[in-house]
Amino acid sequence: MNRMHWILVGALGAGMAAMVVLGWRFAIHPMDEAYDAKVAEKATLDSKLSEAKERAAQFEKFQAEAENVRRDLEFYSRRLDEPLDREQLYGTLQSLAGGLSLRVTKFEVESKANPKGGGELHSINLEFEGDLERLGRLLDACVSQQHIFLPNSVELTRLDDPDGQFRNTVKVKLMMDVLSGARGAK
Image 1: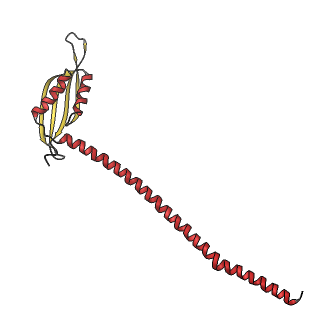
Image 2 (image 1 turned 45 degrees about the horizontal axis):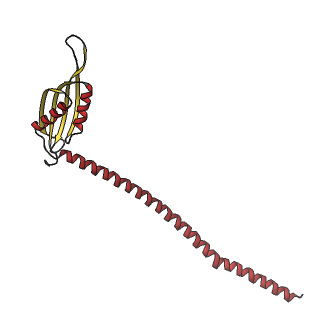
Image 3 (image 1 turned 180 degrees about the vertical axis):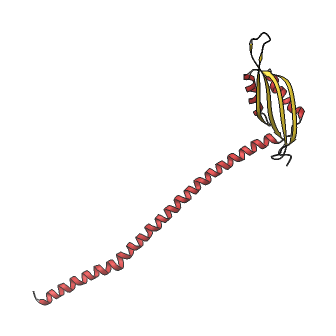
């Protein structure tokens, strides 16, 4: 083997090494950079997607809450549509109390414009005699009516028999407000 042969083998080795270095530099290295850029872009898009999903979940929650509020408003506005007068209030409460065998002994109504909005606010002072179970049923029946009955206070006085025996009967003073006609008064 002569010297020329070794020079040729060396040149060939150097050429191959140069091709590997240049190939990596111009072919593979740009692909690595492009790959890294795509990975970073994917991470950015993934974070944007997760933010969008969170907003979508909040939006659906907001829509459900808005639907609940709309239903509540519709429910209350139906209860506030028609104005009530004194005779209707008395008739409603008398029929509720009579259906529960309660004897109404006093009925007073003071009606005025609702200070918090439209309609009328009726302040009712109602006295009757009966037991506590029927009082509870009356309050339940009042809040279940078409109009909005808002009990404010209940005062109970125990009634005893003249012979000193305890009776299961109390005298009840019930103060409540009734809101009516708010929608038509706007």
